Image 1 (cartoon, rainbow, N blue to C red):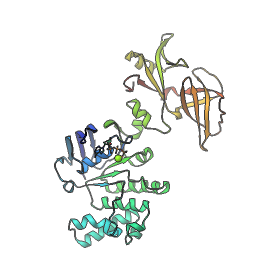
Image 2: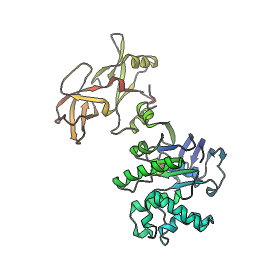
Image 3: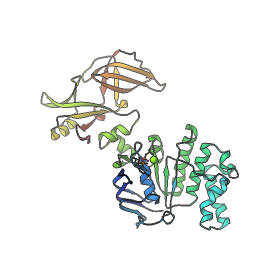
Image 4: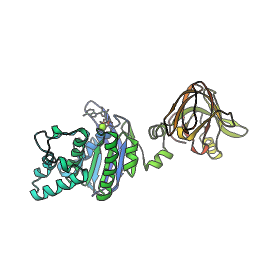
Amino acid sequence: MAELRLEHIYKTYKGGVEAVKDLNLTIQDGEFLALLGPSGCGKTSTLRMIVGLESITRGDLFIGGRRMNELEPSDRNTALAFESYALYPPLTVFENIAFCLRARKIEPSQVKQRVTEVARILDIEDILGKRPVELGGGQKQRISLARALVRDPDVFLMDEPLSHLDAAQRAHMRVELKRLHAQTRRTTVLVTHDQLEAVAMAERVAVMNLGVLQQVGTFDEIYNHPVNEFVAGFIGEPPMNFLPCEPVSEGGELGLRATDGSFTLRLPSQRAQQLAKQNLKQVKLGVRPVDMLATSQAGDDRIAGRVYTYESLGEEGQLAARVGGHEVLIVTPPEDHFEPEQPVWLGVRPDRLHLFHGETGAAI
Ligand SMILES: Nc1ncnc2c1ncn2[C@@H]1O[C@H](COP(=O)(O)OP(=O)(O)OP(=O)(O)O)[C@@H](O)[C@H]1O
Ligand SMILES: [Mg+2]
């Protein structure tokens, strides 16, 4: 068990791609952290630097307080489960899992015990005698996890470990991995594209974009208080709506007017005060589809729009409305129905609106 600490870590590949820039991140001893971010943002590069498969261009990596930069992968006691399986075809599942233990000259009785134990945890005891060619994707993915786990690493890293599983297997493995972590309290980093996966398993989430760490916190913190427009738009499904606005003063109170003139909106006084301090020309109003309401009646502080598309999804509906030149998505209750081109009036939950700096995208 160990704390994992990254201090001012950079990765620049040959050819000049800056995959990771000034990454500062501490994962507590025993913590489960999910690393989220769009394709190419530097997640895999980060994991590969931690395990030692990729050199660190600049900065310091510590595991359990010990600097790791120059240590060989085999001396770091970390394990990485990949998205590709890389199993040895001629070996049985048992031998695939046991491979690294045999290489370390661990006693055969110990090997058997440890392989059996992880096979039990991952529910693959019945396929230990099979060869990779006989297995499906889900089973191979479990073996890849088993191979990482059997080494009993201080730090356990997973790169999209559930990506090849079907929905049911994925739900099952989410529960299993969470239980496994609760049992072992091993320091764990999970890379995923899937926010649900991150929420379901991890205690904290780190969001990266273009090689730069944007925000770290619990999912609730990040969802409710995103530090910038990128995080606000990346976390949450369906994604947040953004509408360019300018602050306007109406009757002594600061409100918002859409840049295209399509609506004006009063702000709760606290938000108005925060905004007034900044003295900005341009802001982005951010509202999540679940924090909006669509009705067929005009009303105070309702934004006029027109239905573009409507889909009924059983438990809820998804309405896309045109507001001026923008499309706004609203999650609607199942009993409501809308027809294309129908006029709608949209309400925004005043306690749930977000404001972002028009140029930098920083939260206000
Ligand atoms: N060996 C390499 N040589 C040069 N550039 C690389 C190398 N590996 C990755 N990159 C580049 O570094 C950047 C970060 O890649 P990385 O694989 O870390 O992203 P990622 O967040 O894991 O993406 P994905 O979600 O698609 O797996 C990308 O621009 C990628 O093209
Ligand atoms: Mg990757």
